[in-house]
Amino acid sequence: MKRLLVLGAGTAGTMVVNKLRPLLADDEWSITVVDQDNVHLYQPGLLFIPFGSHSPGGVVKPRRHQLKAGVELVVGEIDLVRPNENEVSLSDGRVLPYDHLVIATGTTPRPDQTPGMLGAEWRRSVFDFYTLDGATALADKLATWEGGRLVVHITEMPIKCPPAPLEFAFLADSFFTERGMRDRVEITFVTPLDGAFTKPVASRMLNGMLEQRDIEIEPDFYIERVDDEAKKLVSYDEREIPFDLLVTVPLNMGADFLARSGMGDELNYVPVDKQTFQSVSWDNVFAIGDASDVPTSKAGSVAHFAVDVFTGNFLRHIRGEEMTERFDGHANCFVESGGGKAMLIDFNYDQEPVPGKFPIPVIGPMTLLAERRVNHWGKLAFKWVYWHALLPGRRLPVPTSMSMTGKELADTTEIEKEKV
Image (cartoon, rainbow, N blue to C red; front, side, top):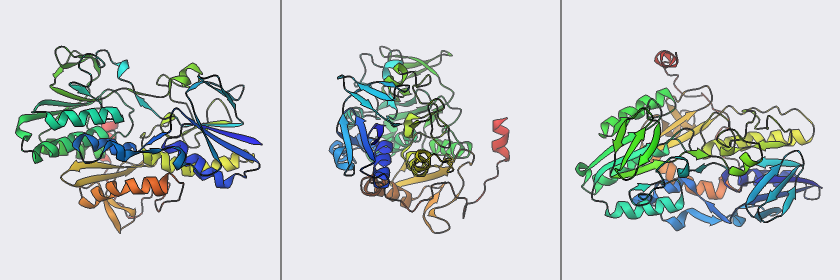
């Protein structure tokens, strides 16, 4: 009996086991997935909780209910991987052997890594929203906040769902406008990037959207510490940004057990081949989703497309064949812009976001690089798709590799100048 062990039962890990279980004979393969609890979190819903449009209870379901029959869930904390011995130790002393290992333990906000962030003002005037507790606490704060200087801040890249901080700023603008208090709120978007986003085409458009909403942007800001007594951010070049309410995205890091196991980089992400997700150090180890170091967005769409590529490659790999499918870095992201509209961007390792229709070329119904109500409806509808199609491993009518059919090629002259 061959043993497939998957670490992490989040989006990527759940899709991996659900896609592979019907393809691997029950009498030849056991499939086990490990996670620290039995709570599966719909992470895109966290963005909406602070503004009261999603409830905390509406974004969680039991992990066991998301797994196909024949997949064993082990609940426990991972202590150490011994890749040379093909085994994983849990903190309670259990040891899980494997023949093939898939690491899908994601990425986690680490406010403890920035001096002062977890100070006396944590969850009083300093909040995160990438965790259920943080989003819920922030909802309580916004319900009674009377205004002042709101700072939306990114500590460092990469982060989970890169557009989310921008979406928060846009939704905050809409939220305070609807409450008739926008004139009492000064919003500043603080980022270590040189613009609003990682891709130049989208960044220029998003910069304009911030300007239209009277949201100031502070680029190239590398935070050194949070001065929670004076309520200000302090950068390494000694710039200071005061706040009355700070909504921060802390440094994101992979799981600590990867550092202890000697398998991660400086941020605990597993170095892999960016096209096959195979570990650069161990042939029978793969890392997928946010846990890997692939140079693309840490987002659910990337996990979806990556797992589609991984599944066929894994079947070839265990047969001793060459892994012929290649992941192109495909990602698409909804960007909520407030007022019941959203923008949609589609890109990969090499291709910038471009105008066009999605997911069906020419037809759509969603429009790329434009604010549309249908894009907002698409984002809301994705919650149903996530629970009932994506996690169960059903194939969606979206191309795994980025398609340029029906899309308009942008003029890249200015982009190339920016890269020089």
